[in-house]
Length: 262
Length: 142
Image 1 (tube, rainbow over the protein chains, first blue to last red):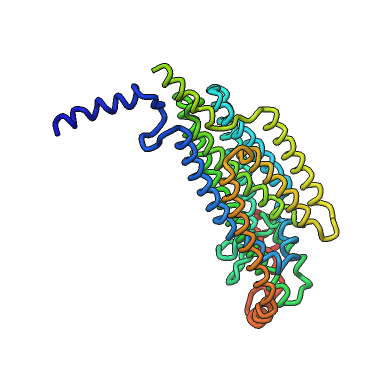
Image 2: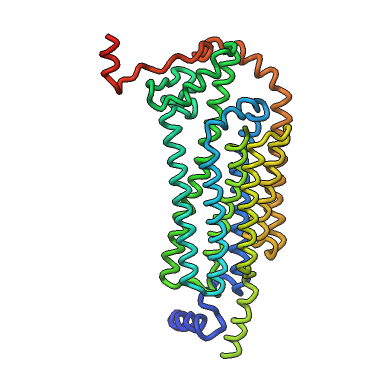
């Protein structure tokens, strides 16, 4: 017993330094390839569940749109294509710098890695900043899911703006629905409310993913500063980049579906 | 010892494919070009093919991101297989839901017509509330 326990630390040391046991290889893996392959497989499994996770909202969008395409076309006029396009470009650039940082980590270029990660983080922050501008406009203009009290689509007591105060969207809507038959107007307003429900859930869930991405990218920057990444150890950078590309993928479909359907 | 260390060094080579900067920059340029293209086609009337064209462009962009940025071209085939599998099931989800909702839409509409007259939207939208921001105007009216 005593001998065994006395041997154990010695054996560990031996395992760590004597054998050809790379520094970053965990004990339950035989080789670095096996370890890297397991991590990648786990990440891809997570990514495909993410695709399925988002698919529920995409199908909700598709179902509503298939039955109300004219209302959805009208609804997209409330969204500013300019901001959507800028955010697409911002996210594509961040995806490029994420792919570059994987390369930097693989080559052991620590300072370039840090720079690319910081650019990715700044782009993510810029994306959220633009989302904030868009969201706050919709919040003040009452373009919100019907369940909210200050939504102009609220089915109980619709929100009505104050004259001259964030009332442009409301006045346009008042003008465009004036000559509709009652049942048609009810359908129109209800469906518009649903559009904003889907809009906020889709972009909101995507925004949460961006925020989580910003968290893990910050963690990578911290670890890069400690000089932890190199040709032997870049799995974390690789996996975070994969996640970030998925966030980009979702937006690639969200942008035309929400902003460009007029 | 040295031989062993060398072995383990060799092991590292298989860890991942390193993408050249030119390829990554080329993909970024293509993605930006396609974004401009989709904005242009999105703001033009294309005889009902708008959605189809936008989705084709988005799919090309997504494929570029998956194949190059996400290393799927050089990765294990199983990852691409699993990922495409999830996309396939999204397609099944979408197709079945769409055929179903199309089939019953008439019933949903006629049900909606019955209840719609209780809605505040049965009346035209009322004018905005009088402004409380400029009191001078209110005083002037009185």
